[in-house]
Amino acid sequence: MDSDATSEMTTKTSKSAPVTVKPVVNAIRILRFLSESAAPERAVDIARKLEINPSTCFNILRTLVNEDMVDFSPMSKRYSAGLGLARLVEQFVTQGQKVQMAKPLLENFAARSKVTVTLWRRMGNDRIVIVSSAACPTDVRIDMTEGQRLPILMGASGRLFASQLELQSDSIKSMFENIRWGTALSFDEYRAQVAQASNKGWAIDDGYFSIGILAVAAPVYSSSGNIDFTVSAVMFRGQKNDAEIAELGESLCTLGRDLEKVLF
Image 1: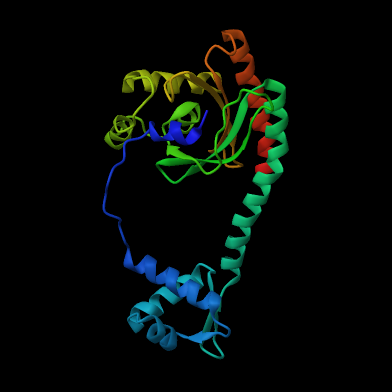
Image 2: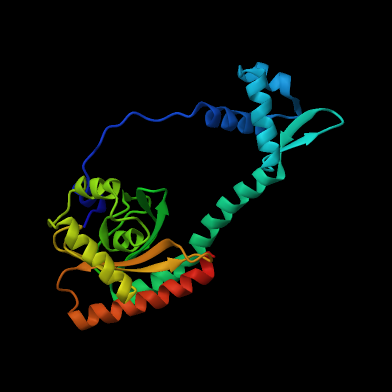
């Protein structure tokens, strides 16, 4: 099954004007400028080259120094990219490497369970993305493309991420109502399924994401106890009976705990 075709039927497009916060934009421009600069720079020169109000530029620089993103030399009165920025970049690179290290675990599980396995990561407050996937090495299989994004409430993984959201809020209900489900369900039914997933420790989506497709997902907890990732098994409906699905859910929970050791 082509995941691109599936994703086209899952969401309604909504057009909204992008929000731009100028101080944030200027801070990013300053960080980029200092990262590319061959030598430390004075505040007045940074303001002039980036066409930022000098007072504003100085206040942003002072804030970035306090946050360890920029270094300041009292002797030369010049600024340069700080160690904190380097550490931040290193963390992103390390996370990508950890995801690659998790790949063999997904591949072994997919081959053993005869399902497609996906690793989902939460992206902000409204989206989740596939960061890794492994398909069962058989003739008939479901392909899920790495990089595919979905609304945070969608699928079996969405029901796990939803357990960390305020489902009573109008914004979450509005988000739910803007999703085009493969099989219709009410918001009350969805909330009941989220509660059921919380009680069992794993979630199921039986044809709601896409007709004919069943997905089971388990959480991958961060060191702080948040669900930052989920691991999901995707298969055709009818491929496994209820007992086998329950066994798969428990096996995914074990896989989730193994992934925690790699990802965190």
